[in-house]
Image: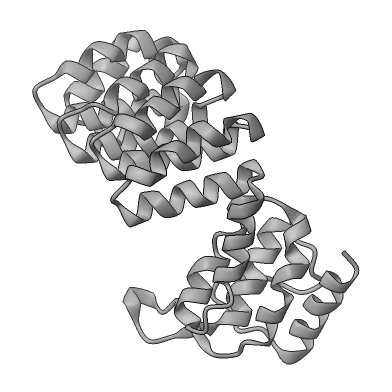
Length: 254
C-alpha cells in the first residue's frame, strides 16, 4: 500500500492492515506521525501498531512520542514495540523515560529494553531510579536489567531468590532466566530440576493443568541455551524422569 492508503486505513480503523504487515513499508512512517495527535484513542493505538511495522527513524520516533500519550493502551503498545527498535544510541531517551514517565508499565518496559541494549557502563543510570520506584513490577524489571548488564550483586540476588521454597515463586523467577541471557548461570539452577512440585498453571482458559518447577526450568534452559536437549521441548509438557536426567547431563557438561 502507498503511505496515503495506509493512513486512510488507519483513519478508518481497519485493524486488518496490521494482520498483513507486508503492506506497510518504511515510507509510511512519516505519513503516519500526524495521526498520533488524533482525538480518537483507537486511531492513535492503531497508528502505534502501524509505526512498529513501518520501522525506520520515523517509526521509532513515533513510538517514543507515544510513550506520553494520554491513553494507557497507546502508551503500553509503544513501550512493548520499542523492544523491536531501540538501539544503544537510544539509551539516553530510554533512561529518561525510566526515570520520569508517570506510567509504571512504561517504566517497567523501559528498564527491560535498557537491559537488552545497554552495557556495564549503563548500570548506574538503569539502577538509579530503583530507590524511589514504588511499583514492584518496575523494581523487578530494574533488577533483571541490572543482572543482564552484568551487575554481580543483582545476579547473585536473583540466584538466591530462586531458593525461595514456594514453587509458584520459583517458577515465576526461573522464567526470567532467558532474559538475563547468560549461559554461565545455567549450572546454578540445576537443583530446580529436582523440584517436582506443581509450579505453573498452563491449562487452557486457566483450567487446572499444572506443570512442575522442573518442567518450567527445562523450558527456560531450552531458551537460554538455544535448544540443547535431545528431546522435544514444549511449554505445556511434563517431562519424563529420563528426560530430566538428560537435562541434568547437559548442564553437567557446561
